[in-house]
Image (tube, rainbow, N blue to C red):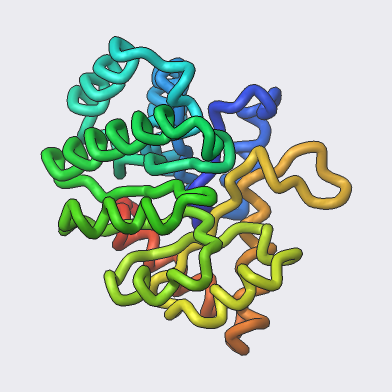
Length: 255
């Protein structure tokens, strides 16, 4: 299995090397998502240290819109361009209306400006996009459609079932994490989304399971097992197809 979206940079991974070594015994690959400019150096160190197993995507998470300045944004863009051969995709990027509330319309507009700027970068570098759209799916999809995206698009932890047909019609992908275990809504999304457009993720260190202090990439098996149950397929079929989807989407240099 492949965890197509986690955050190994987070401080919750206090024993990061031990966890990665454990994952190496059970998983095919891990894709860590660098979501803040301050984490760039750590991300590049990780993919170098665990070359061929840990890969990365890089973006600026929309929830940080109030915390980052123009210089940091420009430096991130320059770092992405400089290291483009080591970066699988641009992301996660998008809109977040959970952290930025309705009364903060100015900040939501700034999110949109940053989103479009990073979409432009992805087009320039011909990189896929990993999209965050918490409580903002309608606006996020509108922007992606208006920008006439030709690259592959992954809607990370997509939960807006009423907009799923637009995702399907655009031939975009979704990634499903351990939250499927508790969420009836996500189970219905998994049921209705073609398997050829589904990947597995954990968004770890979040979504810790009972008995865990933090979530880890090993929790992809929870999502895989539930999808297998919903689609009435074997776990092996889910593993094989979601691996294939991730390898093709990210152009992963693995078999």
